[in-house]
Each structure stands twice: as C-alpha cells, then as structure tokens.
Amino acid sequence: TDGEDWNVYIVWTKLTGLDQGNPRHVVYTTVTDDGAGGFLIDPLPQVQFENGYRSGYTTLAYDSPNAVGYGTFHYSPASGDPWSAVAVIENPWVPNLFNMGTVPNPFANEHIWPHSVFGNTNHVHMTMHELRVGAADMMQITYYRFAPDPVTGVMTPAHDGDPHVITDMAMNISTDIAPNSTGEQLAAGIVMARFGTLGEVFGESDDTQWNNDMYVFQSPDAGVTWEEPIDVTQFIGPIYDALPDTNAANGDTMRVYTDVSVVYDDEDDLHVAFTAGVFDFFRVAAYYESRIFHWMLDDNGDDVWTQINYQPWVRQVEGWARTTDRPSLYFDDDTGILWCAMEVCDGGPDTTDFGESGIVNSDIFVTASPPGEYNGLLWTTPVNVTNTKWLDEGPAPVGECRAESDVSIALDSDGDYLHMTYLLDLDAGTGIGTAPEGEMTDNPIVYHRIAKQDLLDIFEANAEWQPNYPMHVDSTGFWQDPGNSQWAEYGGFFTGNREELSVGEGSGLQPNEFELKQNYPNPFNPSTSIEFSLARAGMVKLAVYNVLGQEIATLVDRRVNAGTHNVTFMADELPSGVYFYKLSADGNEKVRKMVLMK
Image (cartoon, rainbow, N blue to C red; front, top):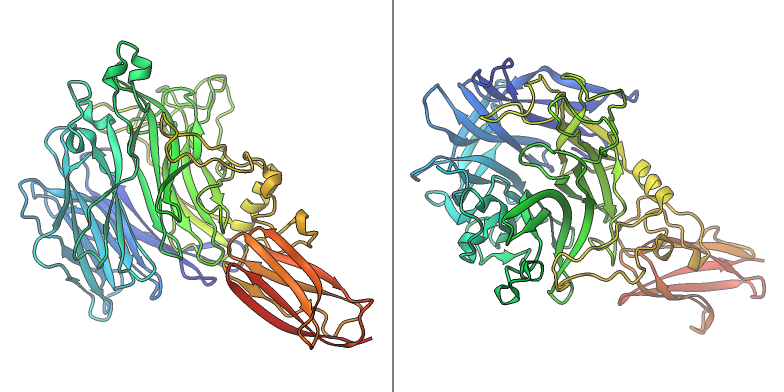
C-alpha cells in the first residue's frame, strides 16, 4: 500500500480450468479506492507475469518508498523442464510486460517455493525450499537476493556466487523472511526437524513432519553473512527417567507445525508468531488442536512466549492445517500497534458449518497487541472478520462452502485500514493431490479492507484480553500478566480513555512518540487542557511552574499507560501571568509556556 493514497498490489496463482494438469500461471492486479466507498480493480482481467508452462507459490516483494512490487514464484517454461525460483520486474517501456531474473541452482534437487521481501538496501530477498524426495525428508533452505532497477527494468543478481545454504535440516515449506527498518538486518523463520537438530527420533515412518522446533536465522549485513540461529521454541523433549508414567515423561506436549510469521518493529525488535499443535511423544500422536504463540526477547534478552489464540478441536480440518493457524503479523509504525490475522476453525460440533467431505469451514480472525510496554505481551481476544457460517440443514454443498484460508496482511498497511487477501474455498479441503479432500472448485481470491478504528472499537466493546498459556511444561518464559488479563486493568490502551487520570477521550490510533502539546485555550481563564502522548507506559510527572522556577501545581505524578492523555489545569486561585508546564517520563522532558489572563 502507499499511505493514504493507497494502492494494493495483489499476486496469486491461477489454474486454467478445473484440471490440476492444466497450465497454471502467476497473475497480478491492483486495487485502488474509487472515492465513493468502493474499489477500482485495474488491470482487469489480471495480467500474467510469465508465458511459460506452469508457475506457482507466489509472494510479493514490495518496495514501499517507490510503490513498486516485485513478484517472486517458481516457474517451468515448458512441459518437462525443471523448476526454477524467479523474480520479475516490469519492463519500463512496455506496460504489463515483465523481465525475469532466475535464481541459479547448482544443487542436486530443485529449490522452489520461494518466499520474498523487499529491504531498504534496494534488495529483493528470497528464501527457497528444496524439492525433497521423501515427504518426511529434511530439506535445504537457501537464500538469494536481487537488486531491481525500475529504470532499466533489469532484475540484477546481487549475490556473490550460488545461493547460500541457510540450513539442511528444515521441515515444511513455511519459511518467512523480514528486514528491519534500514534493511541491513534480516530474519528468516524456519521450521526445523528435531531429528536433525537434536537426533530425536519420533515414530518410524513419515513422522518427522510433526516433531519440529521454530528457529530464526539472522543476517546483520542484508544477506551477505548469516549468524548462528536462535531456537525460538526450545521444546522440552521426552524425559525417559519418568517412565513408565508416559504423561510425565512426555515433556512438552506441543510442537511447531507448518506456519511462521516474522516482523521487526520500529525499534528493530523482532516478533515471531507460529502455530503449535498438540503432541504426544510416547503415544506417537499429533493432533489438530492448536494454539498460536508470539515470541520475542525482553529487555534482558530473555525469551518470552505469549498466546495469541487457542482453538479446541471441533471437527476434521483440512490437510496441512490446524484448528487455528496461518498467523500473519503486521507492525503499524504510525501507532505502535502489532496486528495479527489468522485462520480459525471454530464451527462447533453442533453446527453444520462444514462441507460434504466433512471438512470444517474456516474463518479469518484479527487480533492486536497495544503499543508501548505491553506490545507483544497482551493480545485482544481475536475478532471474526469474515463470519461466513453455513446455517442451513446438513453440510454445505459443493460450491456453497465459505472456507476462508491463507490470509496475508499487507506489510505496509499505512493509514486507516488493514489490507488483507485470502482464498475463499467453495468446498472446504484441499481438492488436488493424491488424496484430495472433496472436489475442485473455482475459488475467488478476496481482497478485504477493514478500518483499523472499527476493529479497535470492537476490541474496546468486547473488553477481553487473550489469557496467556505456558508453552513449556515447566512454565519457562511464561509471561505472568500483572493484571490477570482483566480489561479494567489496562482499559484505554487503544482508545485513550484513562480512568486513573480522569482524562478525556483521545484519538483511537495512538501516536508512537513522546509528545507534549500546547495547552488549549491559551491564553486561558481559569482552566485549560493539556494533552500529552507516551510511546510506552511508565512513571510520569506533569507539573506547573512560575517564572521563578517554583513548582506551584502537580497535575500527574504516577504510572501512566502508553497513549494520548488530556489533563485539565485549574488556575482560579493564581494571579495572571506567564507559567510553564513540564512533562517528565522515561528520561525525557518537554516544557511549554502558557498565559493566564484574568
């Protein structure tokens, strides 16, 4: 997106006809505001990035300062040709014609399923996944980068030699990559097989897919070199000394499955969201019931895990899925709010919200974490933003299902709206492959724009924080909420209402800064309003001084939450003259002058 005058660039994979052997292409279009509450879609029909035989698994590396998107995907030019990971750039002289850069592949197996992002060093960063032989084989994850030149329309390789092998112990095609604000720091979240990292054997056949940790690999120099990874989850493995009590011997009873989302905030702190499913080591069982967790390092460098969402099992979910999964993070630089969209299967057993194949329909939910001290720690109870339930008798027939999946929030959702895309599956389940679930349907890709303020209003009306849950059996890294998840303890994070300060109502989207505004009215008699903003919660003092520097009134001297506050100063007992008011918080100070005129 591009600020208030927004354009949304959308890419997706389009199969020609309902036969999985048909040609398949990556296409794009843009969505803009029509000025009357609706949208304009142009070009329509959508434009293909390439004219080969097949392509797919696309992501978009978006250059926000220049409002240019670069498509990445894997591609085969003709039937029987090998797959390659590619990045495309529009030809500057021929609209809707794209020039292609190909990632070299010196490896024994093809490296495809690329994920990409644009960094402010003018690089398109790409990670690729090895096309492994066995479904449970560990795979290589490789990295490559391009330097796009929109003036010449050339996608120039900006990598020294062949792609860099980040790891050869990965599991599942779910890597996500993110740059920090300068583009110098990169983070790649990768699902790693514990068989590879720890030598931990789980089951006997194709079971390695279930027994995983989440790792983050970081590069300090925009992809040139990569540091030793961080084990984000650090699951406690089996405790054999506790046998024959298998419940005690299981250790942790969760494992990462398929999903990760990584993002840096405006202070270059890293946030990671991932799906963790229920796991029973000694019974060699993994379950569909799941939770989504958030990970970050606290100010002391210690790991902290908090729960974003939990969804119990209700009925059968589709393959490669869990009851809640597919987290998509977005950090709003303007407000300091951390947003997360996700997929949730919440159609209970007493409803008919499932397809003829028995697969439950899913919806898209959104939650947010407030700015300031509790950013990444407190999460609102997620809100269903699609809510397309099948309410008639029996299961939803083919073509009538409404199963939203694979949500993606635009990483540059500046301004007043969240911009999202997702697939609307008209027959729940994966209808292709060797074990299809249900029938193939011609499914739309949905663009969904939501006003952030509308969501904040709903959060305030619901007045619920997501209860935290220990990810580890010994509660390591478990953040204990001092407010016990009670909304009254923190009410007003998003709206500016602060009962403890007796303040007026502020703006909904709080500024992410330390600010003291000029009082109003000024000159005044006998009362005036003083507004200040805090990026983080902490001890605050707001006091009034005379021209001799003597403190004559203390308006605030206590702990105050992050956000915007209004305080009224009554001067009915003071003489006319010039006064000063000073705001002190977190080592910062600001002073302004005001005039009392009676």
